[in-house]
Amino acid sequence: QVQLVESGGGLVQPGGSLRLSCAASGIIFSVYTMAWYRQAPGKQRELVAQISYTSRTNYADSVKGRFTISRDNAEKTVDLQMSSLRPEDTATYYCTVVALGLWGQGTQVTVSS
Image (cartoon, rainbow, N blue to C red; front, side, top):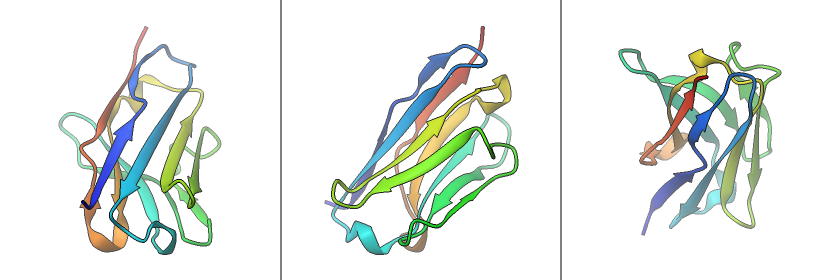
């Protein structure tokens, strides 16, 4: 079964950290660029970070220096380590296989005191 399953979301205080994980199945994971997007209420979905099959990374300006994307091809996972979280990071975070248009169900991240 081809699917992406995200985990690790939750409620965190401003300045805190969270680690999101996305597990892939049913695809040849190692050949694809993977990405994390997010969507806040009333806003468009936006790219947060992506990592190519060669582990080249790209980040949205708003998260540079605070978020780190990584991948484990053996485990078929892509993680997003988020630090120094801000209220404006509150959103549903989605994992995606860019080339396949395959999306996970999303995981909610809420940054609030």
